[in-house]
Length: 497
Ligand code: ATP
Ligand code: MG
Image (cartoon, rainbow, N blue to C red; front, top):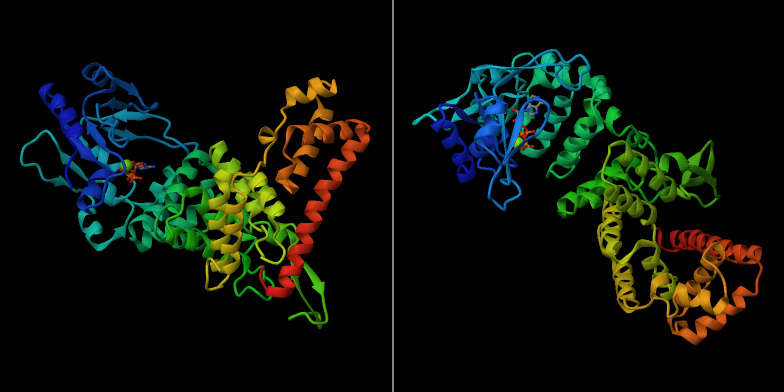
């Protein structure tokens, strides 16, 4: 692995102007480990105002004097290189960010404020034959695969509690062990995470979830108490026993589902949805007595039910992801996957109309992800095959209805024409009529002709507002009731959940 030419060019300009330049932080660690760096960081004695002059195409990145130097590279990791003036940080009274930053002339001072020994290395880019500066034994720790706080872990974590998350994230990402003293400081300082901004926590959580040891990482967040301050909702699933088709409690099942998504190298959205898919189960768990039930409660046979857990789970997921300040797109897509993960795919009950409705609810762009989450769900409950015959059958059905109309804009008559023909204005009434037309087209795509829809629209338009509303509400109710009924039937027949 080589130092990128963009970084070397920046160092050359600094050198020509009498300044020092060092490669620092994660990129040096990654180069030593022969991993591809995630981003490139340069440290220098030149002050930010000097940097802005030397590099006309640069901008202040943050309030601590980091300057982003734009390069000509098209590689997203090299487009902007962060150049930071050597600095020492002072008191962190709010546990979020240092109150003050002091610039310093010495790289050694700068290294002393860094989080872990493996991240406190520096390599001069302006001296020839330079050796790696390693004041805290970072090279040996990388060799031994150990994450160790620079100097006193308690001080480091109380200065900036994000470092708690970083320790666990690096451990999952690099497969390193956390040194004993550092590890025991994690649980002690976990409550400080409450004061760290959600955006910073989110970025670390994302890196953890995207790492190959994500499941271990989440377990580690449990054993160090960090999860309590990041996604406490997941902890409700610990010891939450499930029905007879599950060997794991709800928490373990969510984790096992995540594990499958990680092993399949699925996207962030699918991983988050897998982790959260049953987060609504603890709140919806009810005991159902049944003489044939497999479990016992107070001497009576029965089993646990979780009706509506997907809907409750979608709401909880949304709340969690909003709190963590994920993008609107991620929030919407992940919570949609949670809400729809119980979709029916049993050959004996699934109908073409049902599959069209699934497409309409989920959107074609999310169908593949939804199937992935369902696979993760199945594997996560200990069922051996990810895509049994039934799931493949559904995919074949989806293929069949691929070009069928499923949204208002695919109707053979548009809103404008309807308003003219019926002589009505935009508003709820028009909405109800369009919903009615779509219903009939979802049921039978052959209905989708202009004449046909127009005559249906005219019939609907003869009804009162109230009647129209009732029809729409009934349709919705029916769809939901059918789903519950089908769920029950499937469970009885096939022992799937
Ligand atoms: P990544 O692979 O995610 O980029 P990284 O170690 O490079 O990991 P960055 O966030 O890019 O992490 O930060 C670069 C360097 O800045 C770190 O290696 C570390 O030396 C220092 N650093 C970053 N965040 C902190 C922090 N919260 N406390 C102390 N030092 C930090
Ligand atoms: Mg980095």
